[in-house]
Image (cartoon, rainbow, N blue to C red; front, side, top):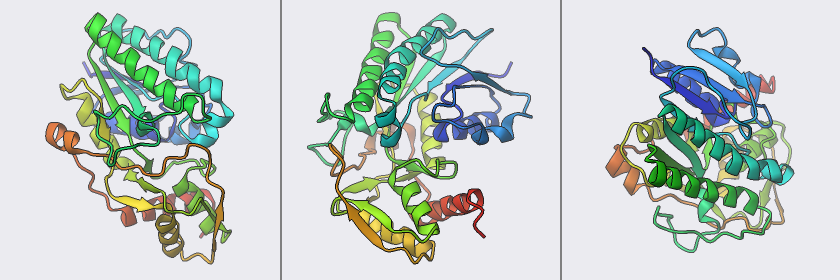
Length: 314
């Protein structure tokens, strides 16, 4: 019998790459999504695979899956600021009700549960780099609070199920990730810079551009998540690339790599936008024997080629 995994949000950017990974590892995969932010295009190549099953469903409702289930990866959620500012209540519901329903299914099936949490649980951090023991600096009533607090609640609920019901649970705190299949209109820095640069439009940098991010290529992230799922670690684990870069440097790199004629323009920094973001991945290195391998230049070039194909740019 093949191991069976349910991936909620499986038609999203990260979810679809996880579907690929588990199919390649000889799992049977159930992908659940309602396409609020995911896309059928991300999983179209999988529909002929006999081990792939798609369910169009809203995970904030009771979830029923027939037969056995070994693992559940809960990745359903808007993840871009553009999305969760546009869908604040849906974001809160999938982080709370959706996590509750997915944990209930894991309990009923005796399945191991992995929660996709986020570096946003650290908010605008007062320590740098961010280590898992840091509790964060989050504005619960700010615009970004709908995402930050939904994920913080989801972590607390996951640990409650682990402690009270003895459920096998894992929590991954995902730092900024990029790669093929990111939505062109995603709104985050890399897809925005690439789409603007490929169109020779002004590249928009917010604030003075000196705020930093640490960006991880999607294949590295998926590898880390897979290792965490199969590990014995219950407490949260940072998965991300500690190679820190300013937004201005990132914009300049992408203009160069796309050979664009774009100019950089500056706009006002959004409210509560973190000034720094960099994971301490000591725990992932020690426990999972994991660290990122793909350089930023190689990863961005692969992402540019994917955007060119989808934008029909020769």
